[in-house]
Image (cartoon, rainbow, N blue to C red):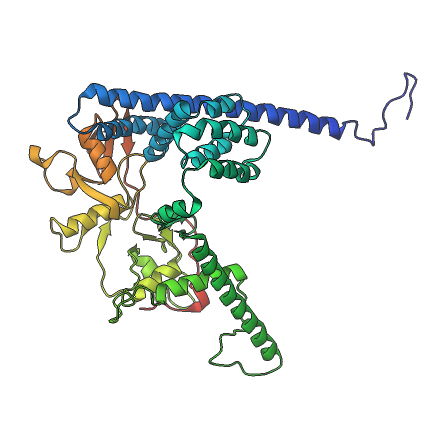
Length: 468
């Protein structure tokens, strides 16, 4: 289209050049990422200073404990102060302090490349972790080669090269290191949302591959049997009562692997470790769960419990430690329980009021486990089984052994309270006020054991009543 002034672009064509926009965005992202990396390097420098400060405080205190213990206590105190403002676990902060101090003192080439944004935090972690097995004499040689390998490469692609460099310089063979590493084999669990948890296992590569391959073979066998059963059902052939095939089973290969793993671990016999009397095979899984009364009660068939006073009547149950689980699982567990410990809570605030057959020892511990459900130091989330019952006012100073003067603390924070300048006092209703060495105050409230949500309850699965 033209006009009297001259040629103008066709309004139906986008005048923006996508290539130019992409180039601008790419340049902006690169500059932003470089700034972020430089700031992360500055943050690590501050954390390294915090670690050095802790070491100085430990030396200046003249503590009667060994130097290592004194440094650890001072580092805990400093890390707790930083964690309070970062809203992070002080364990994580203390670990980062130690790692940052190591980076500053033992890896100067890596720190310089990090500060120049030539490598990122993942590269730094790769270099530090890989160099852990090297002697001091070869660390500088490794560091220069590793930084050069990381520049311009992703951490994943650089990992193989960095590990080859470390293997060439390592004082011990892979076989020797594997034998040492095997001593650290372990199993752990982590919380996930929606009533799930993750189970982790560290073992030798051959064992892990063998476990995964066996589960995969079993899952394929079940999938094949299911497909056969589905085809036979379509042809009018009655299913084999002794077979594993189920025409209605639509689980994926991943789901089957998970279910087969759970079945084996929960019901299988550890033949490689059991005794002739079957002592290990007799051990059964134990789960501690808190179930609200309305959740444990089976709703009438065809009716809906609805809400009471604007609050959902059917509340989630919780595993020990506070993680919610679905009501179907809670009812199944409740149906198989041989005994119950009743904990009475306030219907609105959910504060723990009492437990049955109150006694100063076991019942008080149960009450505090139910009230606190985690370590009561701010930023800590360890579950009740890890706790010491701490007297806020020491029993030696007349502090009573009662709910209003007790709080569950993990061993780490129990030691921190008694051996550093951190202080705590009870404000009532289980609320704790922590005061840091710098005088800052932090409030920690016990997590409510029941989450109130205005919502209609879910119906039971397959219209089945609760198993009790």
